[in-house]
Length: 124
Picture 1 (cartoon, rainbow, N blue to C red):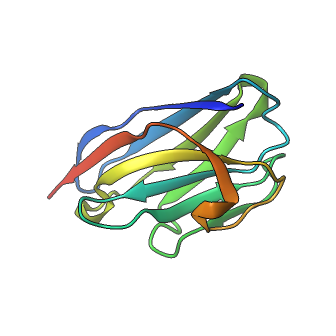
Picture 2 (cartoon, rainbow, N blue to C red):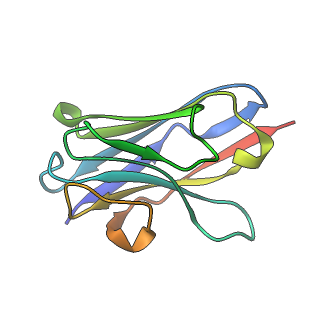
């Protein structure tokens, strides 16, 4: 089993930045692709970004490309999401997810492990 715990969410003004962290425990971390998803109130969960096991490959949703950066520190069992130029439409609960594969895509069914989520609110 892989346990995931997110942190770093909060309230920020539009144009500001936040950095989310997700610490993994329970099994080997460096072999798992990791992803960030988000879910706004009344909306379906949507893909934000993913990173391969080594960190060498990343992929972003068009809505965050150029503003968000996913990274990982395997020695710390941690994946990060740096969010810049935040917009009110980025308001959501952000979830960290782990895949059993080295590479994964944007579909939530590819990820078998999920954190509890951390809320991000961007005020206008």
